[in-house]
Image 1 (tube, rainbow, N blue to C red):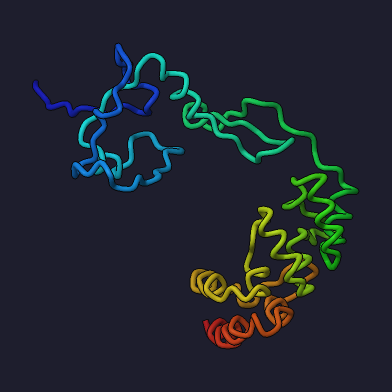
Image 2: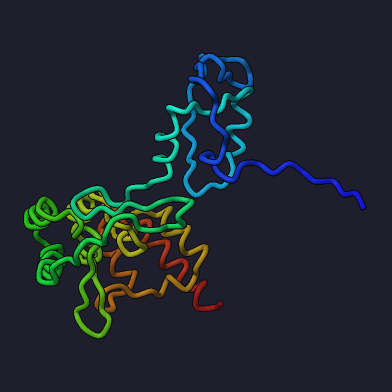
Length: 236
C-alpha cells in the first residue's frame, strides 16, 4: 500500500538545521524585490510555525549559522514583568515553565495602603509605585470578596488624574475605569459582547452608571450610551 506523505514544517525555529557558515545578509530578499521597503514587526511568541507574513515578505532563506544558535535559543525566553520581581518563562518549548523562582508576595499592609490612597492622593500613589512598581495591579479585599485595585478606587471616585497615571504605569483597565475616563468605544464594544454589563457593579457594589457620572463632561457620551443600553438589556 502506497500513500502520500506531505512535508512537515519545522515545529519551531530552533529545530531548523544549522548552516555551516555565517549567513550573508544580502541573501534575505523581500518577496517583491524592494530592499528599501519599511520593515514590519512580526510577533513570533507562542507560534509553532513561521507566520504567513514571513512567507510573503521573504523570497529566499538562509539557515542560521552556528554562531547564531545562542540568539535563537534565547529568543524563546520571555521576560514577564520587568523589575525586581520579574519572572522568566520558556516559550514555547517549556510550555510556560518558570525558569526563575517566584518572587515573594507583596506586603499586604502596603497593598491596603496603596489601594486606600488611590481613592484620592496622587502624590502618595506616585510614591508607592516609585518604591514598588508591582503594586500597580495589586488588589485588596475589603471583606466578603470586595476586591479593589488602585485603578478601581480612582475610577469610582472620579479621579481622572490618578487613573490616567496608573494606566500609564501598566494598570489593567476594565469597563468601570473606561466608563469614568470617557472611553466610549471601549465601553460600547464590551456592551456589544456582553449586554448584561450595563448593570455591572464594581468595587463596593458601585454601579457602572455611577462611574460614568463621576467622569463628568468627558464621560457624557458613555452615560448616554448606558442609558440607551439599559432599556435594551432589560428587554433581553
